[in-house]
Image (cartoon, rainbow, N blue to C red; front, side, top):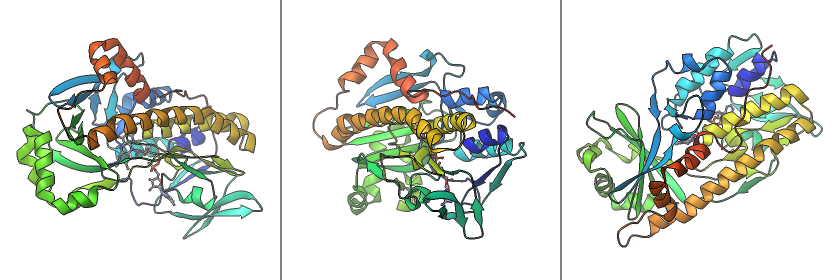
Length: 380
Ligand SMILES: Cc1cc2nc3c(=O)[nH]c(=O)nc-3n(C[C@H](O)[C@H](O)[C@H](O)COP(=O)(O)OP(=O)(O)OC[C@H]3O[C@@H](n4cnc5c(N)ncnc54)[C@H](O)[C@@H]3O)c2cc1C
């Protein structure tokens, strides 16, 4: 959607195809990072965007046993909007779609599922949906981590492995609850809680494939574990009425060896599925879109431009995934498997507690990423 907006703004003709009838999806990433807020500012949309209902997250905290430790402080990052804006992803997408529709070249088709690609020899020349064939100078695969486009194009996926899955659910939030968005680490358990105003959006991290075992132990045992992690909300665990209220996110960390073919470019999760560590998937997808618009508007749609885009975005992707895999393997896996003795915060976290100035490092990695992009594509 962001790339569609930017290309239409540059005077190009763009069709965005979305398979669903709307953008309503529960438990999607709802984090709009400082880097995305900066992009919205560069597009002249920031003030209007911040009028949408949202919560501001200025600091991330981690709780190890009973010790609450600030780990990322966005106020220390020198940007216009030093916070994460929590906003439902559908509000963000509808906002972008509304603004993109101001440009005459922009067209959004809902309930238009791409089922295959069109080829002329080796070159990709468009897409097929159930209702039509659309020919295009360039097809962008931005269809997420189960991308049809990338599999039809036969692009090779490098799997980096993920030892964890996440279970998403919500419980109501009361005014007397703590206000912070935080992660709770306890012996054998990790719970991330996002303050969504009148409810908590929670992710319970489990070892990969452990859901069946949890189900065998029963919902009551699951609720009791959660109540132990969230004593202030123990009485609300009955809001998880059945296992249907708990959604499994099967975590993947992967990236394409090559993000493009003649006539095709993949970006966002279609090019690189990210771990939920740090909540940076949206950030990287938006950064890819901004970089793609910059490169395509300057260099055209030839293979050199597509190669230049991968070159630009691959390094930040690799560095972020490396950081995520280290956190997954060295911290999350250990917390999940070590069920003995009191849990001590890892050294890196203790250093963040001791030296507040260090908290700008995780804030930068999460909030801006490794190579923040700026809008250079023209407004025609
Ligand atoms: C449960 C969950 C929680 C997450 N939490 C966070 C978070 O807190 N912060 C964060 O930054 N990231 C989070 N993420 C990751 C984040 O949602 C993604 O990284 C980000 O949305 C990627 O954007 P994208 O545009 O590349 O792909 P997507 O957002 O997946 O968008 C792809 C779109 O393409 C459509 N589509 C798919 N196939 C087709 C087709 N064949 N034809 C037409 N349309 C198609 C889909 O319906 C979808 O709308 C989370 C992901 C999940 C699943």
